[in-house]
Amino acid sequence: MKWTKRVVKHVIEGLFTLSGGVTSLAILLIVVFLFKEGTGLFSSPVLERGYTLCVNAANPVECLDARQIKQLFDGEITEWQEVGGKEGEIVLFRFEEVFSLYGEEELGEEYALLPRRLEEIVAKTPGIIAFLPDEYLPAGEEIVKRLVAGNISPAQFFGGGEWQPTAGPAPRFGVLPLILGTLWVSLFAIFLALVPGLGVAVYLAELADDRTRQWLKPMIELLAGIPSVVYGFFGLVVLVPLIQRVFDLPVGESALAGSVVLAIMALPTIITIAEDAMRGAPRALREASLALGATHWQTIYRVVIPCASSGITAAAVLGIGRAVGETMAVLMVTGNAAVMPRSLFEPVRTIPATIAAELGEAPAGGTHYQALFLLGCILFAITLVINLSAEVIATRKQGKGLGV
Image 1 (spheres, one colour):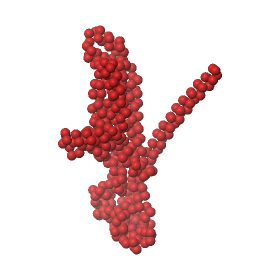
Image 2 (cartoon, one colour; image 1 turned 180 degrees about the vertical axis):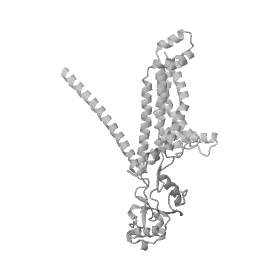
Image 3 (cartoon, one colour; image 1 turned 60 degrees about the horizontal axis):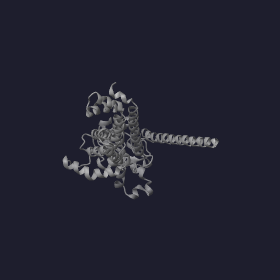
Image 4 (cartoon, one colour; image 1 turned 120 degrees about the vertical axis):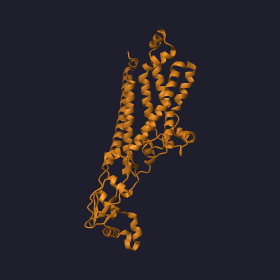
C-alpha cells in the first residue's frame, strides 16, 4: 500500500513538473517568435516591397532617405537641388500613369513591351523620378538609374511621429504617437480611478460591517468579469455623447472617453488589492493607535494606510497594467487617430487598438505585418516592466510604510 502511494505521488509530481516545463517552454517560444518577427522590420526596405525608385541616368542623385521620399511625393520638395541634384524641377511618375500614355497594342501582349515603354519615358524626361514595380524595371542601365533607399532604421521607427503603414511609395512606421497615446490614456485613467478606488477600499476594509462587505465586495469583483466589449459599448453609447455635449466637442471619441472607460475597468483591480492590503495590516497596530488616543479616522490614514502602502502602490501599478493592455474598449471610444496627443479632448490611438485594427489587413510577412509584431514587442516590454514593478513593490515589508 505504501509502495502504491509512493508511485502515485511521484507520478503526480512528474505530471506537475512536465506541465510547468511545457508551459514555460510555450511562453518562451511565443516571446522568441514575437521578437523574431518584429525585429525583422529593420531589415526591410523603406520602399514598398517589390518596388524601386528610378531616375534618369544623367541625374547625379544616388540615394534618398525616407524623409526625403515622403517630402518629395507629398510635394514639399519640388526641385532636385533640394536633395543634392542639379537645377531642375522634379517630375513625379507612378507606374499606373503608363496605361494612360500607351494603348494595349503599344504595351504588347501580356505587357511584354512595358519595360521598353518605361525606359522611353525616363529617357525623355531628365527630371523624372519613377516609382516602378521590380518586374517591369527597364533594363537599360545607361538610361535608367535605380536609387538607393536603404532599410527602415530603429530611429525612424521609435522616433518617428507618423504612423501611415499603407502610404506610398514609402510607408511611415513612426511609433511615437502610439506609445504616447497608450501612456496618455492609461495614466490619466489611473489618475481618475485611484482616489475613488482607494476610498472604496478604505470603506470595505475599515468602515463597512460584515454584512455589507459580504455582498458589496463580490459585486465589485464581478465587474472584472464583464467583457471589455460591453464596457466599450457603454462608453460609445453613453460616455461619448455625454463628453461631446458637456465639453462642446466636434466628436466625443477622444482620449478622455478612453480614460474614463479604462478607469471604470481598472477599479475592481485597485479596490480588491488595496482592500486586501489594508485588512492585512496587523491588528496590534490599530489597537496601539487607538490606545494612544487616536480616533478611528486618524488610525486609518496615519497607521493603516502607511502600513498597507506597498499593497496600495501595487494595486495602482497593476491597474496601469490592466489599462495599458486593454484593446476592444479603447478601440471603440478613442477615435483611432494615429496622431501625436496634444489634449485629452482629441482622438488618439493606442498600441493594442492598432494591432487589433490592422493585423487582419496586413499581408503576412510584409513590412506592415512586421511593424505590428514590433508593436507587440513594445507592449510586452511595457507590461513586463509594470508587472515586475508591482512584484517588487508588493514584496516590500509592510512595516516600511510606517517609517519605524
